[in-house]
Picture (cartoon, rainbow, N blue to C red):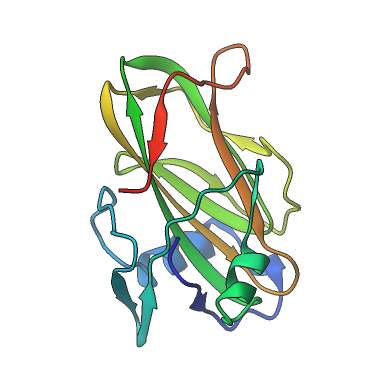
Length: 175
């Protein structure tokens, strides 16, 4: 996860599709949506130099408030970028990326947009699901952006099969 990009966001009801797409394009750490940053590396977003952190969450969700608090960074009015590498021993077809977040988020798989969650929402697991996707054999890159104004910020993301069951036959790493 990248340290939070500080944003002047007074209300979460501004998170329309257009607002999110425009903000994520403007406050992006890299135009390469398959880039995998290294733990401890820095990135410039606007006039902010931010550090990447490897995080292994044992919970089903990641609490961005706790993450930013631990770093002594802003906890409200933030945009957080996320990157995860998934290694699949075989191709897995007809999966859906399922995500939940407080406020807005956008998710990409292997450089292609997979899911946009707009509006001011509560974090509920599987609050939104993508169209059918294919996890290719080998390395797959998930990239996410979560944005929030006032209030708590957290997210969860996973892949589910055609029956809605979690996809488990892959491994996850941060580099």
